[in-house]
Length: 356
Image (cartoon, rainbow, N blue to C red):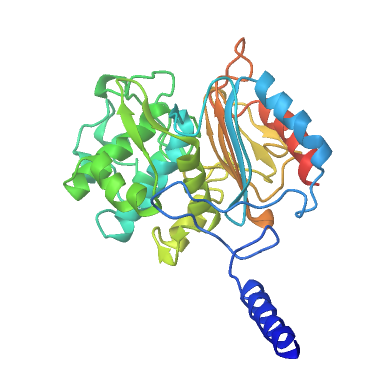
């Protein structure tokens, strides 16, 4: 009998040791996690163990549904804390990023620079040829690649179709900030310098490396990326980690840091196609008015964001190790936005009720 009891004790001890030595992450794990590049496995974290206000989550979901949201995700340390789909959308469905996709072009341009294919301080005409605008040569020569990244080309921003006759002079490059589709010329810069179609270069250097799914739609007016929600979250996770993915520095950290800081003093709330919170003033698309204060006053000051028409959003909050994604129709169909909108403050009121 004693031998049997001893055997049972040993077996239970072995099981206990095996259980205690398991490496299965829990919601309290604060290490950074990256999902596998293939498959649907993605670790989760518990809102309750993070100390969030569980009672406020239903209010957030109701708000999202009422505001024509299709999907919403929150990652903390790379792990999914919330993943919700609304209004007939699902995890495999793809949706348009609209201008939030500008950030993909920003990163791809930076990758081309780190491969010594281009230099953002050089003239755009060095890469796409002389006469790409409808300006005097001396004015066209002022436009550098970084002016396209920072929306300071000085080109007329009232014409949406980016063709040579429409690219007319308004101001010297670097002296005026104006939200414009002319950033799309960056895809030509990358394609020409890499001798590869832009989408193929993007897929090889960025998309495939982080396991994204999606495609570009190169239209006559807009260049728009489409993907599922988790692919948008993957890019947000790359941004949270300053261009690093599973110990591979996909985009040079110095370039990425520059791109997510003020690119000029006219609109300090704008980097290289990224929107920045916590600055002293900001401008919005379609206006030359300079507003005092921060972009989203009730959001964390260190937040930077990819923002697109109809309220497509990726919020990156380094201080909270957090990525938030929203995809959907316009929150206010009667007054749809190009990028920044009052929706951001309304959404952050609901998010704050949950996470603070």
